[in-house]
Amino acid sequence: MAERQQRRWGSAVVAGLMAGVCAAGLCAGAAGCSADGGDGEDDRAADRAARMSADPVRALRRAADALVAAGSSKARTSMEMATGGTRVTIRGEGVYDYRRRLGRLEVVLPQEPAGSSGRRPITELLTPGALFMKNRGAGVPADKWVRVDTATLSDGNLVTGGATDPYAAAEVLRGAREATYVGRTRLAGVEVRHYRGTADLAAAAAVASGGGRNALGAAAKGFATARVPFDVYLDEQGRIRKVRHRFGFVNGRQAGARGASGAVVAVASTTWLYDFGVPVDVRLPAAGDIYAGRIAEE
Image 1 (tube, rainbow, N blue to C red):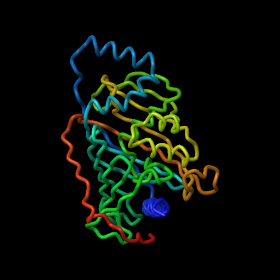
Image 2: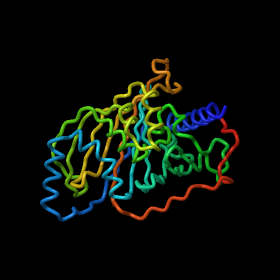
Image 3: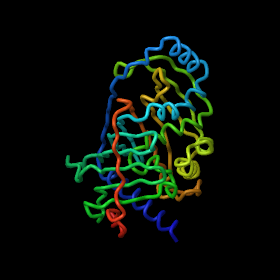
Image 4: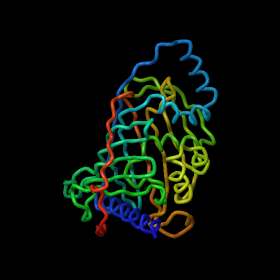
Protein backbone atom coordinates (compact mmCIF):
# COMPACT_ATOMS: atom_id res chain seq x y z
CA MET A 1 0.00 0.00 0.00
CA ALA A 2 2.79 2.45 0.94
CA GLU A 3 4.64 1.76 -2.31
CA ARG A 4 1.49 2.29 -4.42
CA GLN A 5 0.78 5.56 -2.61
CA GLN A 6 4.34 6.79 -3.22
CA ARG A 7 4.02 5.97 -6.93
CA ARG A 8 0.73 7.89 -7.12
CA TRP A 9 2.46 10.87 -5.50
CA GLY A 10 5.37 10.54 -7.90
CA SER A 11 3.07 10.34 -10.89
CA ALA A 12 1.19 13.40 -9.68
CA VAL A 13 4.44 15.36 -9.31
CA VAL A 14 5.55 14.34 -12.80
CA ALA A 15 2.15 15.21 -14.23
CA GLY A 16 2.22 18.61 -12.56
CA LEU A 17 5.62 19.51 -13.92
CA MET A 18 4.80 18.23 -17.39
CA ALA A 19 1.50 20.14 -17.34
CA GLY A 20 3.44 23.29 -16.52
CA VAL A 21 5.94 22.85 -19.32
CA CYS A 22 3.40 21.64 -21.90
CA ALA A 23 1.35 24.80 -21.32
CA ALA A 24 4.41 26.92 -22.06
CA GLY A 25 5.85 28.11 -25.34
CA LEU A 26 9.38 27.59 -26.60
CA CYS A 27 11.88 28.61 -23.94
CA ALA A 28 15.70 28.68 -23.95
CA GLY A 29 18.04 28.68 -20.95
CA ALA A 30 21.71 29.58 -20.63
CA ALA A 31 24.05 29.60 -17.69
CA GLY A 32 27.70 30.08 -16.95
CA CYS A 33 30.11 29.15 -14.23
CA SER A 34 32.71 30.89 -12.14
CA ALA A 35 36.40 30.17 -12.01
CA ASP A 36 38.45 28.53 -9.29
CA GLY A 37 42.23 28.38 -9.24
CA GLY A 38 44.32 25.22 -9.39
CA ASP A 39 46.09 23.65 -6.42
CA GLY A 40 49.53 25.02 -7.37
CA GLU A 41 51.21 21.61 -7.20
CA ASP A 42 52.58 21.48 -10.74
CA ASP A 43 54.09 18.00 -10.70
CA ARG A 44 51.07 16.30 -9.19
CA ALA A 45 48.72 18.26 -11.46
CA ALA A 46 50.69 17.23 -14.55
CA ASP A 47 50.63 13.58 -13.51
CA ARG A 48 46.90 13.71 -12.84
CA ALA A 49 46.29 15.41 -16.19
CA ALA A 50 48.22 12.71 -18.01
CA ARG A 51 46.16 9.97 -16.37
CA MET A 52 42.90 11.78 -17.18
CA SER A 53 43.81 12.00 -20.86
CA ALA A 54 45.14 8.45 -21.13
CA ASP A 55 42.21 6.71 -19.42
CA PRO A 56 38.98 8.70 -19.93
CA VAL A 57 36.66 6.02 -18.51
CA ARG A 58 38.62 5.83 -15.26
CA ALA A 59 38.64 9.64 -14.94
CA LEU A 60 34.88 9.81 -15.44
CA ARG A 61 34.10 7.03 -12.99
CA ARG A 62 36.03 8.96 -10.33
CA ALA A 63 34.31 12.30 -10.99
CA ALA A 64 31.76 11.79 -8.20
CA ASP A 65 34.57 11.09 -5.72
CA ALA A 66 36.30 14.31 -6.78
CA LEU A 67 33.13 16.23 -5.92
CA VAL A 68 33.01 14.63 -2.48
CA ALA A 69 36.63 15.68 -1.95
CA ALA A 70 35.68 19.24 -2.96
CA GLY A 71 32.91 19.25 -0.34
CA SER A 72 30.37 21.57 -1.92
CA SER A 73 29.62 23.92 -4.79
CA LYS A 74 27.08 26.17 -6.37
CA ALA A 75 25.05 24.68 -9.21
CA ARG A 76 23.03 25.81 -12.19
CA THR A 77 20.80 23.48 -14.15
CA SER A 78 18.97 23.49 -17.46
CA MET A 79 16.55 20.78 -18.52
CA GLU A 80 15.26 20.82 -22.10
CA MET A 81 12.24 18.64 -22.87
CA ALA A 82 11.01 17.90 -26.37
CA THR A 83 7.89 15.98 -27.33
CA GLY A 84 5.32 16.29 -30.10
CA GLY A 85 7.15 19.20 -31.72
CA THR A 86 7.22 21.24 -28.49
CA ARG A 87 10.47 22.12 -26.77
CA VAL A 88 10.69 23.85 -23.40
CA THR A 89 13.42 24.58 -20.86
CA ILE A 90 13.29 24.45 -17.05
CA ARG A 91 16.09 26.22 -15.19
CA GLY A 92 17.41 25.92 -11.65
CA GLU A 93 20.05 27.42 -9.40
CA GLY A 94 21.31 26.59 -5.92
CA VAL A 95 23.95 24.88 -3.78
CA TYR A 96 24.96 21.30 -3.00
CA ASP A 97 26.84 19.56 -0.17
CA TYR A 98 28.44 16.43 -1.69
CA ARG A 99 29.54 14.93 1.62
CA ARG A 100 26.08 15.08 3.18
CA ARG A 101 24.31 14.51 -0.16
CA LEU A 102 22.06 17.52 0.47
CA GLY A 103 21.18 20.27 -1.97
CA ARG A 104 18.77 23.14 -2.50
CA LEU A 105 17.60 24.44 -5.88
CA GLU A 106 15.19 27.16 -6.98
CA VAL A 107 13.54 25.75 -10.12
CA VAL A 108 11.83 28.09 -12.58
CA LEU A 109 9.23 26.72 -15.00
CA PRO A 110 8.95 28.19 -18.52
CA GLN A 111 6.81 31.23 -19.16
CA GLU A 112 3.20 30.90 -20.23
CA PRO A 113 2.46 31.85 -23.84
CA ALA A 114 1.04 35.15 -22.52
CA GLY A 115 4.48 35.98 -21.08
CA SER A 116 3.84 35.26 -17.40
CA SER A 117 5.36 32.31 -15.55
CA GLY A 118 2.08 31.93 -13.64
CA ARG A 119 3.73 30.67 -10.45
CA ARG A 120 6.58 31.26 -8.05
CA PRO A 121 9.80 29.26 -8.39
CA ILE A 122 9.63 25.78 -6.91
CA THR A 123 12.05 25.27 -4.03
CA GLU A 124 13.52 21.76 -4.07
CA LEU A 125 15.53 20.01 -1.39
CA LEU A 126 17.58 17.09 -2.72
CA THR A 127 18.42 14.30 -0.29
CA PRO A 128 19.47 10.64 -0.49
CA GLY A 129 16.28 8.82 -1.40
CA ALA A 130 13.85 11.74 -1.25
CA LEU A 131 12.83 14.94 -3.04
CA PHE A 132 11.09 17.77 -1.13
CA MET A 133 9.21 20.44 -3.11
CA LYS A 134 7.70 23.75 -1.93
CA ASN A 135 5.45 26.10 -3.91
CA ARG A 136 4.34 22.94 -5.68
CA GLY A 137 0.89 24.29 -6.49
CA ALA A 138 -1.92 21.85 -7.36
CA GLY A 139 -3.75 22.47 -4.11
CA VAL A 140 -0.70 22.14 -1.86
CA PRO A 141 -0.67 24.97 0.72
CA ALA A 142 2.08 27.55 0.08
CA ASP A 143 3.73 26.87 3.44
CA LYS A 144 3.84 23.07 3.01
CA TRP A 145 6.34 20.71 1.44
CA VAL A 146 5.67 17.69 -0.75
CA ARG A 147 7.92 14.67 -0.12
CA VAL A 148 8.50 12.01 -2.79
CA ASP A 149 10.51 8.80 -2.42
CA THR A 150 12.83 8.97 -5.44
CA ALA A 151 13.24 5.19 -5.65
CA THR A 152 9.53 4.91 -6.54
CA LEU A 153 9.87 7.23 -9.54
CA SER A 154 10.37 5.60 -12.92
CA ASP A 155 13.22 8.03 -13.68
CA GLY A 156 14.85 7.91 -10.23
CA ASN A 157 14.43 11.72 -10.04
CA LEU A 158 16.91 12.32 -12.84
CA VAL A 159 14.08 14.18 -14.60
CA THR A 160 11.05 14.47 -12.29
CA GLY A 161 12.09 17.58 -10.37
CA GLY A 162 12.90 19.54 -13.51
CA ALA A 163 16.59 19.39 -12.55
CA THR A 164 18.99 16.49 -12.18
CA ASP A 165 20.46 16.10 -8.69
CA PRO A 166 24.12 17.23 -9.18
CA TYR A 167 25.55 14.25 -7.32
CA ALA A 168 23.26 11.84 -9.18
CA ALA A 169 24.49 13.40 -12.43
CA ALA A 170 28.04 12.57 -11.35
CA GLU A 171 27.13 9.05 -10.25
CA VAL A 172 25.66 8.31 -13.69
CA LEU A 173 29.27 8.58 -14.90
CA ARG A 174 30.24 5.66 -12.65
CA GLY A 175 28.52 3.58 -15.31
CA ALA A 176 30.68 4.96 -18.14
CA ARG A 177 31.19 2.14 -20.65
CA GLU A 178 32.97 4.04 -23.39
CA ALA A 179 34.41 7.52 -23.55
CA THR A 180 36.57 9.64 -25.82
CA TYR A 181 38.87 12.45 -24.79
CA VAL A 182 37.82 15.28 -27.10
CA GLY A 183 40.40 17.86 -26.05
CA ARG A 184 41.11 20.84 -23.85
CA THR A 185 39.02 24.01 -23.73
CA ARG A 186 38.02 26.74 -21.27
CA LEU A 187 34.76 27.37 -19.41
CA ALA A 188 34.39 30.79 -17.80
CA GLY A 189 38.17 31.11 -17.62
CA VAL A 190 38.80 27.61 -16.22
CA GLU A 191 40.83 25.15 -18.26
CA VAL A 192 38.92 21.88 -18.61
CA ARG A 193 39.08 18.56 -20.43
CA HIS A 194 36.13 17.59 -22.61
CA TYR A 195 34.99 13.97 -22.75
CA ARG A 196 32.16 12.39 -24.70
CA GLY A 197 30.72 8.91 -24.22
CA THR A 198 27.93 6.65 -23.05
CA ALA A 199 27.03 5.47 -19.55
CA ASP A 200 24.93 2.49 -18.51
CA LEU A 201 22.44 3.26 -15.73
CA ALA A 202 22.31 -0.34 -14.49
CA ALA A 203 26.10 -0.42 -14.19
CA ALA A 204 26.07 2.96 -12.42
CA ALA A 205 23.43 1.73 -9.95
CA ALA A 206 25.53 -1.34 -9.11
CA VAL A 207 28.41 0.80 -7.81
CA ALA A 208 26.57 3.95 -6.69
CA SER A 209 26.50 5.25 -3.13
CA GLY A 210 23.84 3.86 -0.83
CA GLY A 211 21.50 6.81 -1.30
CA GLY A 212 21.68 6.75 -5.09
CA ARG A 213 21.65 3.01 -5.78
CA ASN A 214 17.88 2.50 -5.71
CA ALA A 215 17.13 5.70 -7.62
CA LEU A 216 19.56 4.88 -10.44
CA GLY A 217 18.26 1.32 -10.48
CA ALA A 218 14.72 2.63 -10.98
CA ALA A 219 15.93 4.88 -13.78
CA ALA A 220 17.68 1.96 -15.47
CA LYS A 221 14.31 0.18 -15.66
CA GLY A 222 12.11 3.19 -16.31
CA PHE A 223 13.85 5.03 -19.14
CA ALA A 224 13.37 4.09 -22.77
CA THR A 225 16.99 2.83 -22.68
CA ALA A 226 19.49 2.37 -19.86
CA ARG A 227 22.28 3.79 -22.04
CA VAL A 228 22.81 7.52 -21.54
CA PRO A 229 24.95 9.60 -23.94
CA PHE A 230 26.87 12.40 -22.22
CA ASP A 231 29.33 15.26 -22.66
CA VAL A 232 31.33 16.25 -19.59
CA TYR A 233 34.03 18.79 -18.78
CA LEU A 234 36.44 18.08 -15.90
CA ASP A 235 38.87 20.56 -14.36
CA GLU A 236 42.46 19.81 -13.29
CA GLN A 237 41.20 18.28 -10.01
CA GLY A 238 38.88 15.90 -11.86
CA ARG A 239 35.78 17.82 -10.72
CA ILE A 240 32.80 18.24 -13.01
CA ARG A 241 32.41 21.78 -14.30
CA LYS A 242 29.71 20.96 -16.81
CA VAL A 243 27.89 17.74 -17.69
CA ARG A 244 25.12 17.17 -20.22
CA HIS A 245 23.09 13.95 -20.27
CA ARG A 246 20.54 12.94 -22.87
CA PHE A 247 17.67 10.86 -21.50
CA GLY A 248 14.59 9.39 -23.11
CA PHE A 249 11.48 8.19 -21.29
CA VAL A 250 7.94 7.19 -22.18
CA ASN A 251 5.53 9.57 -20.49
CA GLY A 252 3.10 7.82 -18.14
CA ARG A 253 4.98 4.53 -17.96
CA GLN A 254 5.65 2.89 -14.62
CA ALA A 255 9.09 1.67 -13.61
CA GLY A 256 9.94 -1.75 -14.90
CA ALA A 257 7.54 -1.54 -17.85
CA ARG A 258 10.00 -0.88 -20.69
CA GLY A 259 8.28 -1.28 -24.01
CA ALA A 260 4.92 0.12 -22.86
CA SER A 261 3.22 2.50 -25.25
CA GLY A 262 3.29 6.26 -24.80
CA ALA A 263 4.82 9.46 -26.12
CA VAL A 264 8.62 9.44 -25.93
CA VAL A 265 9.98 12.55 -24.24
CA ALA A 266 13.56 13.50 -25.14
CA VAL A 267 15.36 15.25 -22.28
CA ALA A 268 18.72 17.01 -22.31
CA SER A 269 19.83 17.80 -18.77
CA THR A 270 22.81 20.12 -18.25
CA THR A 271 24.46 20.87 -14.91
CA TRP A 272 27.14 23.51 -14.27
CA LEU A 273 29.17 23.36 -11.03
CA TYR A 274 31.28 26.24 -9.69
CA ASP A 275 32.46 28.04 -6.51
CA PHE A 276 33.66 24.81 -4.90
CA GLY A 277 33.89 24.87 -1.12
CA VAL A 278 31.08 27.41 -0.71
CA PRO A 279 29.21 27.19 2.65
CA VAL A 280 25.99 25.18 2.33
CA ASP A 281 23.19 25.16 4.91
CA VAL A 282 20.34 22.85 3.90
CA ARG A 283 17.73 22.04 6.54
CA LEU A 284 15.04 19.46 5.95
CA PRO A 285 11.43 20.38 6.79
CA ALA A 286 9.88 19.25 10.04
CA ALA A 287 7.30 16.48 9.87
CA GLY A 288 4.48 18.95 10.52
CA ASP A 289 5.50 21.01 7.48
CA ILE A 290 5.10 18.11 5.05
CA TYR A 291 1.79 17.99 3.17
CA ALA A 292 -0.09 14.71 3.58
CA GLY A 293 -3.21 15.55 1.58
CA ARG A 294 -4.26 14.91 -1.99
CA ILE A 295 -2.58 16.66 -4.91
CA ALA A 296 -5.14 18.19 -7.28
CA GLU A 297 -5.14 17.48 -10.99
CA GLU A 298 -3.56 20.30 -13.06
